[in-house]
Length: 289
Image (cartoon, rainbow, N blue to C red; front, side, top):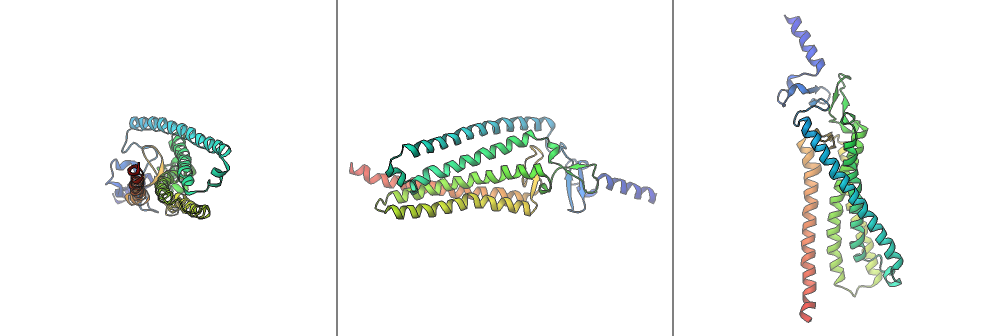
């Protein structure tokens, strides 16, 4: 009897069945990995979502991402053409003021925000064109078994989609905040028209540096941190790799919810301040009339 129990235990361990995964729904679809001491589901297993739900989500995501990609490309081309044409049509006085704060606020942040939208939508579109099994990893203890990627840094398609969707997705939020901040600052400097051109250009250069540091630095820091900390995971529904896509709620909180909430909060604060500033600056002129 002891021999039979020992053989059965070794067989179950070889198959990946382990009592450590009993707490999960459809625990037979999970494999317990000794190295990481966690339960990982089989590749393309229907645990939380059915095959029909996954197919519908894939169709919807493909349609929306393709539409967003086309619209973003058209918008980006329009911004480039508009800047190019205005550059030739502008007078010498306008070209001299090209580096002003107002010029930066109304031209640069919207351009980079649209630029990020192009790559963000392209990342989601590309993720749905790749075979879901390509996002999976081989089991270290049984190479014949494919598991859903919980260490996405070991999978090239997973890490590539992660760079496109997470970096540029967070960069969109960062540049949206930059739009609000630069607009608010431009309103403040527009009220003081007595500032010299050289001072205005120096302030514009400083604002540009700070905005680029925020717009690219925050997403880059969090993206690299996610890779180094091994927090990139594949999602069961769409197979899109991102922090917290699996069962790690702390990664979802630290890499997505808190940064995105902070960006939205800062953007709304500066938009409200800008609206108040604009209302206050127009009130004297309306009274004078």
